Length: 313
Image 1 (tube, rainbow, N blue to C red):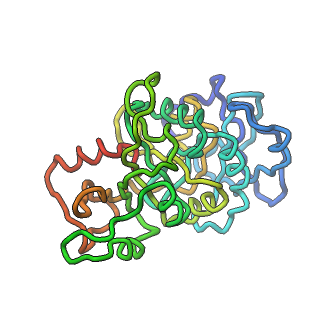
Image 2: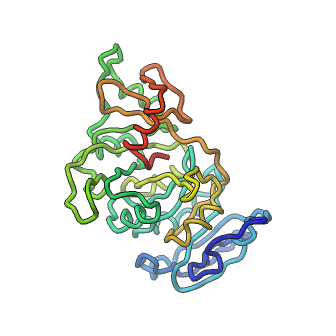
């Protein structure tokens, strides 16, 4: 970045798999062993990325470098989703327990596989999320939501007889719905107490179905939802919207990959609590208030949202 030092680039945590190609010629290379991936399998995958934008802050990522460990896969993909074939290595990494960054329809999210306990532990460490805090999930479809939660309420007692039907009209979209977790949700996703304490009874979980082509292309190839948490600057506690800066800050902390879908706008999802008597907006964001939602305009609502689901993108 012009005038800014890129932290971690020259350290032992080198970002060595940031490839850019002007042609479609594939490059076959083994993946790092950061989380014990099946390198023999991954070496057959093509690590492909679009031609680099000749922008000063992206020049650091224009040439491939290689090392045996502590590497980061950096993939540039068109936001339209027309280059979904470039996401194949990322999908394989996620299935084997990787932790990385992908775009959503709101902002960037740090994600990992729902059923990988070790990946979730690393995600919590990278983001510095307390073990007592619940995490949100990115779902492929309404079927996922039905599997990992007890579902949407049938009505709100205020003339809206079928909330589920209303919800379907705004999904996929920029909403995080807080629902009661089902028995299918792994215990390590919703946990209370210290890291050594036994997992308590599951409570609530935030669910999302992002309306983003890149995110949807990844989710469609997964065998389960992705655990998700928003990307914020550790020091300023502000949203991070540039994937290059995200790689600089969080790469040395243990990220395995970053999918660059362009710079985003700092506009988080609207969080709606569906566990009460009526759907209540606890954070108004990108998603507009709909007629069946109850809004609260005081400052306590934003704090309440952070307590319910601090990881919501």
